[in-house]
Structure formats: structure tokens, C-alpha cells
Length: 201
Image (cartoon, rainbow, N blue to C red; front, top):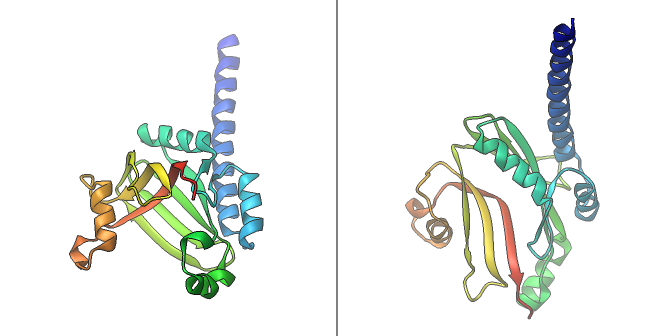
């Protein structure tokens, strides 16, 4: 009798755990679809299970990201929502450029990243728009860390990038972004980017 009760309790726990997992993914999907101005979306993201990157390029919610990565390592399905918040840095742009773009900021972009145990899919959307900006699939997630270029406003980077080429490097990805050669571009999506050691102006 005790054995039967133990089996029933274990089964109930497994069902509850699965339901919670599905509910969590659903809540992230709902948050991803929420249309709000950038500042309101930022406050909502910080109050939820999202990984948030602020205007200084610093990440919060690293425990959420680490939990996602642990599931990926075990090839278990997982979902994570990242919120990237951007403001204009008036001190590091021309006055003309600032005047031209100031009314478009701040902006927040949601990245809904899903892993099915074999590949990644990522959808991106501006928080203030109902339209999805992009929807792509990738085979791999690579982790890059290192010293930032001397011209950067931070000293180190910690990036996770979705790619189809497992041999891609951060240097080859950056070079492809600035190259005039179309075949130099490396298909990728940077979903986690933590700028460490912010330099003062």
C-alpha cells in the first residue's frame, strides 16, 4: 500500500512539474507579446522571469539565464525571454545624429529564445510594436568571452550567440558585420550580451 501511495505521489509531482513548466513558457510568450512603451516594458521585464540588459549593457537575471543554459547542456527543452533596453548616448554621437534619432528612443527589444532539445528558435520584437521583427532558427549556441577593443565603452564582454556554424568565432562574426563582402557575413543572433567594466567618459 505504501508503495502505491509513493508511486501516486511521484506521478502527481511529475504532472505538476510539467504543468508549471508549460505555464512558465506560456507566461513568457504572453510577456513577449505585450505591447508597451520601452520604459514600461523595462519595468515589467524586471518584475518578471526575464533576463534584462539595461542601457549600460549590464545584465540582470543571470540566474534565469544560467538555468536556461543548464537545460540546454542537458538537451532538455527550455525557454527564456531576454529584454534589451537602449537609450541614446549623447556624449558619444554627433549633435546632428542625436537630434535626428532622439525621438525614437528609448527602445526595448524582446528576444524569445526556445530550445526544443535539438535546435534553437528566436523571435524578436520591439516592445512598442505588435509586429514581430524577425523569427529564425539556429543549430548551435556559442559562448564568447574576452577583452573588448580599446575603443569600446567597456573592458570585457560575455556573449552568447546563436549560429549555424559551430566553428564561428566572435572575431569572424564582428568582421562579417563590417565587411563589404556579402559572403563574409556569419548568420547569427546575439541573445545574451553582458558588457563588463564600463569605462567612464
